[in-house]
Image (cartoon, rainbow, N blue to C red; front, side):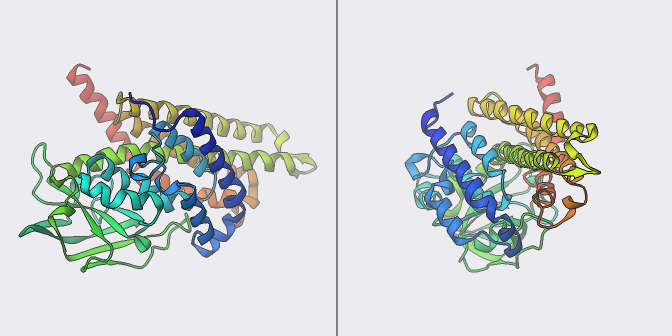
Amino acid sequence: MSAPQVSEEDFELIRGQVRDFVRSRVVPRETEIMRTDRIPDDLRSAAAGMGLFGYAIPARWGGLGLDLTQDVELGMEFGYTTLSLRSMFGTNNGIAGQVLVGFGTDEQREQWLGRLATGEVVASFALTEPGAGSNPAGLRTRATRDGDGWVLDGRKQFITNAPIADLFVVFARTAPPRPGDPGIAVFLVPADTPGLTVGPKDAKMGQEGAWTADVVLDDVRVPADALVGGDEAAGYRAAMTSLARGRVHIAALAVGTAQRALDESVAYAAANTQGGTRIGDFQLVQAMLADQQTGVLAGRAMVRETARAYVSGEDRRIAPSATKLFCTEMAGTVADLAVQIHGGAGYLRDIPVERIYRDVRLLRLYEGTSEIQRLIVGGGLIRQALSGR
């Protein structure tokens, strides 16, 4: 297990700055973000100035170089406010940026990672498509050799940051799947490449300010050096590795959001009355608060342990899926209880728990649904038993 690039002392300063930014500057503007469906430019600039577009990118390419144990601590801070804030820079640090960090050639890293770290370039992870979401093996987007380059054809959907992306990390099939070889490669496609078009932004249930859209690739020609790692076989490994890491981060976001829902619930129960009695004095309300607190504590411990095991290499598959499963389901339960504790007020659009209730629903869907996580965990345990581990 290698030491993180940022010392514990320095990281505590970073986390303190992030917490102050989230709670003093972003939380007061959550309603504005929700109503306008966008992150204000001054908040984007502030996030870039703090290094948040590259906190998980190694320092040699201009990032802060945080490892996953530190990443999840920031994730729990980001989760305390509208999840669209994290979406603005999450792909640069996470599933797109990590593909380049882990699998890119030296030239690809030098070309893109520095600009990802500063926020000059916003990346999109173009994996999901109609008929192929949580399971990349069902991809239909094709990449065909054409001389020294490639031609890409297909359609992606629900692609985060697509309307503002400068670079698409595109997964495409280069060959029919065979045992041990899914035939999937990864390509770097600049947004201005002819033949690539982005559809209108999706109208979603929640997470206003985090834009997603379809991406269509029609006879998109890219040079040979657009192939990530210069190796077709790297694609599927890149997807699985990036998704596993990303699932731990999503779990951390869920814990942060659940903590916010709990805090809102406690404050409401302590300040409001029903029939002359403080709501928090009702035992059934106390029971709901207790269930919320228990879920948050369990989720936080689970995230931290899973991040540690990922960094050490002890478990990079089963624990990330189990943790995402538990924490995202837990956040949904905590948010539902928060609305219940607020009563009718919890159903009003400008009340934080109403937004949280809508926002957290997506956490159980992206980067692998809860059902896919159960399959990964259950199947992985059986394979371990059969292999004698």
